[in-house]
Length: 264
Ligand SMILES: [Zn+2]
Ligand SMILES: [Zn+2]
Image (cartoon, rainbow, N blue to C red):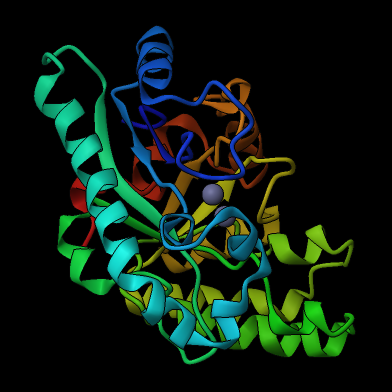
């Protein structure tokens, strides 16, 4: 059913959380809000790098940094997966279900900053662009556009289920979203069976035109609050509003929205 799962939620595992995001707190709130469950999608690279290195994003341009961090990081990643799985085992059947997920970035060599050997253990793998090499070198809009398209296309080659906040990087850098990015991303999502996220963290992303294009091409839309602070969790008011602006009424929701149990 529509809006019974939140497919993008961070916990205290992610350095960027803003407090209170323990799994216990989220489960309690999910129950109060009548959610059937939610996906825990902490940043994979936060399990492989310390807080400072994580934000420097050097592993995006130098994948060897990730390979060097793998041995220790894998252990932390496995602990993370086990923690979520253990909750599901110890919770009773009336408890909201936790989906095991993670949010990955893509490096300049086209590989996800994530150990693909864990792919089969995940209910949902989401991919997002958070940083691009041109940001380090001072932005110009033409380079940003080229890098954005290159990295987005590479990210979508990494077996992700959901493309998170597809155009946020433009807004985050106070730039207009170039309309020409919409069609190639939507067509790639269609080819790969990837859902496009409607993300409500800080500002809605993507816009109505992008969402409309997904609907026209039969690309599923995924509901994700991208919770970093507890007040965001399970609040789908923005997604409901933007879907309505895109001409989707309640009867059509089940046809256009992503659900984890019928993904490819
Ligand atoms: Zn993200
Ligand atoms: Zn996120």
